[in-house]
Amino acid sequence: MKRYRFFTVMTVGALLISACGVGGDSGGSTDKTLTWASTGGQFQEDEKKALQEPFTTKTGTTFTNISPAEQAQVRTMVSSGKTIWDLANMSWIYAGAYCGELFEKLDDPALDRSKFPPGTTGDCFVPTYRYANIFSYNADMYPGAKPTRIQDFFDVKRFPGKRVVYDYPKAGLFEAALVADGVAPDKVYPLDLDRAFKKIDTIKGSLVFASSYGAIQQMLVDKQASMVLTVTARTIVSAQSGANLVPVWDFNTTDIGVLVIPKGAPHKQLAQEMLAFVTEPEQAAAYARLTGTAPARPEVDLDSIGYTDQQKKFNAFLPDRGTTVEQDKQWWIDNTDALVKRWTSWKVG
Image (cartoon, rainbow, N blue to C red; front, side, top):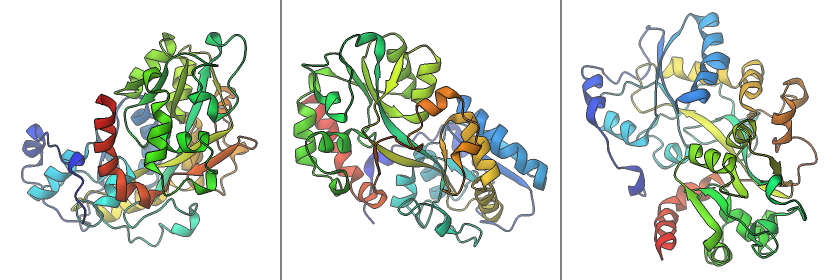
């Protein structure tokens, strides 16, 4: 298996201490407690309200919540044989790259992959929600001509100003660059990285690479950037915080959020039952209502969710929202390591 060195930086500290004495039984325990690792903040609070509390009501299962959920901690737990997490909210790339090694394969029949959109599942993951990488601009900073297409993100002459992006290649910038350069959306994959980097080079001096989603939000609210390419939920929160954002429905990429089960999880079977519960229409709709994301299963009627007007404004899955392309899961699993290295060198070059 290809090794993803950028995933393996370890911060072990208290993890081994807290894991001391915990075995790796992957499903036999009758203890109805799940340890849930996630991102912290409001989004983990939304998980508690929309997903965990109803499961507790239904099954009596209780939850221990931990944050943040980091890949290095999973590696440490698994390598020491002391896994204490049952579910973790982290990138599907990890689960795809280390399926069966650091993460459990999902084998519960209730996790029927035919229920999910094509290209959104793997042996170790199914989607728990869907989101988009959205191109938006600050209307206060463009009182005249307005951006209307993805090419405008790369047109600094007609639309000057800083563009803020998350400092990670999988944030939609490469697909956007190729489409802006004339590649048909259905021909974006496999990514032509030479062509994409050449296009991104044309705006490199206007790009700001944010180290966190919180930094993106702050820059938008403070008008330190006039355009942004970022995820659905962060776009909504930025708008709620005062940034006068307008989405451009021309071309955007879509992606999934997942909950994965670390290898040797103490309660694997119960964790899989929780995964099946999370994707059921009632819970999926409740989580979408809180976060503005979209349910993972397409049969959930988006009109039934009860989105706020602001959530609807930034929802790429509603009708008449331009062209969207699902990020190719296998391409990113196979190529992220090399692309992150190239991205890092390119930024300082």
